[in-house]
Image (cartoon, rainbow, N blue to C red; front, top):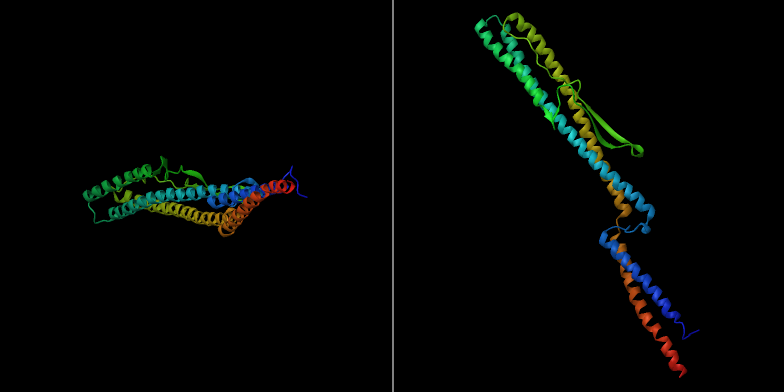
Length: 270
């Protein structure tokens, strides 16, 4: 029943106008942000899950960086070991040459001078093969690297243990055929030790590179899942915006007509 004191139709129109305006504003915010969860009230559970996934991705990106850095550090170590191996190969050749009966004492002295100089160079390589101030091939490097998250967010580390990779001078000399024979044996043993050390380093490099690739795949998958969870469906949200705008305009028109009802009733009563 129409009444003059309370304009129920206008109140209803205002309520629908406010609802439609809010819906339009919400759609605009979602379209502008690209996210379907602009406020916690949009999807509280979805927001919680998305926040956790975002945190996991941040941690995994750092893990990927750590794995890459660890591989780089180990490549520096391998480079140092390769140089030492080259020096030892030359020292082995010198020891072999000194063993020859065709070499004179004078020539053997020249050979010994080079042998001794190369032995000193090994220590130089050891002390200069460093990363960020840390020696890598003196048997002291042993560091943990965060490379991912396990079940229930457990931190996953890989240890780069190079304590068995210990470069040291061979010692001795090749000034005589007798000392040359000893030096030949010692150099050969040291070459084998360095080869074992390079195998250790190479295995660690491969492990860190493999883990880095696995982490990159995890990041890709998690980001895809998070995108499905929080990213707005542009087509659907655009449709909602159009609908909300149309209903807002209809509510404005309805409100204008509702506001005229009391005046119409008054004219009827006159």
